[in-house]
Length: 292
Length: 273
Image 1 (cartoon, rainbow over the protein chains, first blue to last red):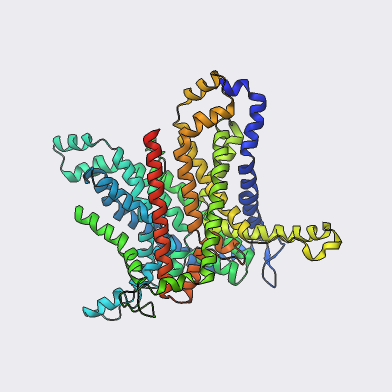
Image 2: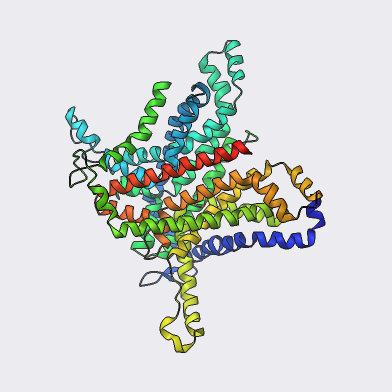
């Protein structure tokens, strides 16, 4: 601290210089774009596409025209998050509590690798597996005909779980790893069955990881585009797909802006409600999210 | 429990293995598999569009990672000394940059840049000397806008990672260094930087990976340029060919190599520190 006090004159100038690029970026590429789409969302569509100045809420009144995209997103995003959670938890538990010390670092790296490899390509692999010559063909061999997987909500859910599982495993693992294993022994020594130990000791103590993981996955899912585009095939679409359509195909910028603003609004409200429900009782839930 | 874990790993790696296997398809079509040949590899890498897209992506990801790491680290260091309203505003913007979905960032950046360019281009044309009329610079979407948009998100990521590290840093060393009359620059080089280096490296790698992997932001703001994910996406849309599997395998192996190298580097650095 002594250093900052003695050099407070030039120190301030240095601080300002250090913050300059970030400030510029935030203002020009975050604040300005968001303000621009907010203004556009109050405008009208120009006849040739694009924007015509106006001050109207007509775009927002028109939102029900894309209701299906919103209901799909708002059912499949929470559902996908829950499925990730259910599948990730036992694995995280195994890694943190059961796995031997020798094999553990290797198994952890195996969870992290998919997270670092192309999301697009990992999703693409499922076009094969779920497509006509994949699982449906296998099903035919054992006598199940006309099985249809690709371009269904199930396909999108599988894609979601596959894409986001590593992101869910990691925070849960971190919080289970920190958990004092002696508490588990104490619980069973005091006569609690494994079931009771899990629900009264393990689960509450791993809550911070659960909250972090599900927030991460849910936030990313709300803006998802690739998975429904590749595995939903125009039948199961999210708000993200509606946005691409509105901006790049029909060029209805004002309506698209209103949809984008609404998406961000719903997302922020959902996150706030969720954090309120969880109660933030788990003080010190600030875990670092470093992946490597 | 162990069987369950094995099943999850099979789920995670099965599809990846399938893609790698299919890249060695000897047949002409992607849907039927004939084992095994590398015929598609040379054919794929002779595709100039693909190679160009790959080079574009590497260039964009490299520039983004360098900018985001330098600017993000600079901001993290400065933020230690900023308090009050300015600090709150900065923290809020950092989290907003991370929380807002990429697709919204892409759209908002596209709309804002197009609007600004529409205003600026006539101005530039007006100010340009009339003698050189055919060489008037015109602002447009392209590499620059992709790098700028990627840098926003990744910079915020670097700030969060590096600041977490700074908070856990031993501050007495910095004071000692200043007491021993080291210049602020010398203190930074010899005391602060070595301590925050692992975080800076993680930030760099995350930024590179994010930028290299990003499809949706680039899809909106790349203009007529193509990045690797855009190329792969449109080739999937046109119909899957064995070529797509070759690209996929190559990208998978490249990111794996990068990840392993990074892990080894970081581990060495950590062991030393």
